[in-house]
Image (cartoon, rainbow, N blue to C red; front, side, top):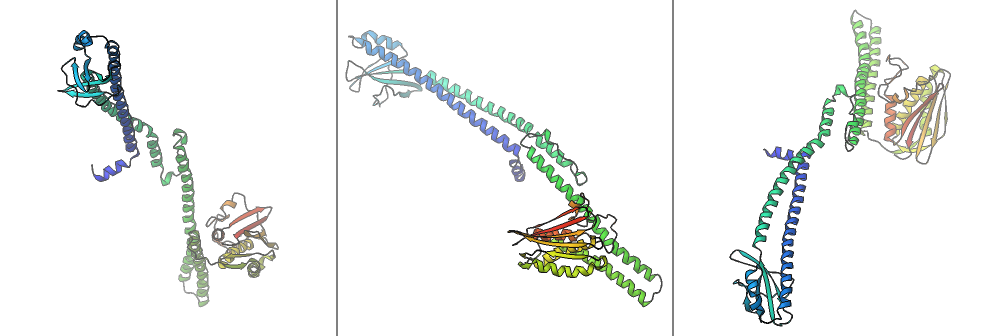
Length: 452
């Protein structure tokens, strides 16, 4: 296996879960085996301790009789319990020819003396005789049987631990494979989603509780992607139409002009018409670039004090001439001062006033009301005209959106970029744009923070 494959496998959740499960099982088995082995050793030690204590009780009770060794020596010589008597640290009696270890300093009858001779293991306790000061009895037993049992038992525990670890590893692999199957199902659902099938959604009722937030989040992301794809598709169609129409007009006019000789006046009229179409293309491209830069914070924004009342007054003077054909009147109220980019704010207000002039009915009034709060300022522009359909209001700030889907260019229609640019400028100044329309009265409200 290459280093890359090893690294890839270690990054696998399944591999790490299996290794973690196997390691935890092995640790638990080792601790259990060690505890069991310790318990067996302790059991044998306690058993030997009880036997030696009981034997000493008998010796301590009978040792006051005369000729104790003569009477009971044969019993200890035939018994599994070995007896040594010491006087002033000198051996005076041994029931069997088994040498004691050199060190017998332990006087505590609760502490074992353990030694081995030629492969035979012994365990003994040293006692003080009550009626014979200076004389000690050492009682011991052979622990060979214990050692053999413990060694065999340890081998069984080791083999059991190895087999149980292998079984736990296999079971861990099966459990991990089974419990990760929802992830494989999720992967299959995700693979089925393509740009052509963005309407597919992952059903969350078939997934465990831990994966449901992930599925819900993924479905929400698909909703956003589907909307973005639809808008991108519409944007491509819209921009193609916006550029195709003036280019088509210029192509048609140029071909007609070239079909036969024309006078200078006719050529001039055609060139003027082409310039108008080129201006329309240039404005569309410029607006698109401006909108793209504003949405990605690429525009350089300068902050300076802006008197909204003066700015609105200047714009009204300009649009009064544009509204002469409809005999429109303008009214203005309120005042506010903000810190913002003057050219951007002027462009946003210009777009809203241009939109109001374009969609106002003849002999009506356009009202501009300025209000200011502690944190923000609002400019409400109200005009009288056709009521905007409720379903169209959320789409007004989309690029190239127009309620009239015929897209015919005329004096009262724009490219559909003014309102999106206005909305983008408002957000750059920590504000927003909203619209209300009912009973032929439409109000666009531009909200801007007092300090950007």
